[in-house]
Image (cartoon, rainbow, N blue to C red):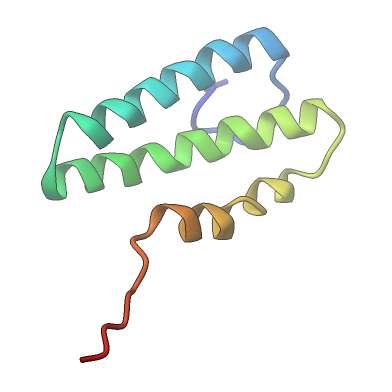
Length: 88
């Protein structure tokens, strides 16, 4: 059973926390150290394992794994650069 590729199953709090910190550190590395398209590609590749990890933890807490999709839109709103209309 693979921790990052199989969304079926459960994960306890301690393994989830250590693995989530590892994923967060990896995302921070690619966000702040590596630049350009390579960073964007790597962060996109890390998205699936992070979603699987979150789905397993939600299932362990007795919630639906579909709740993992809820934070997607607010995160996109906060991370994307705002479009500013300049009137001259």
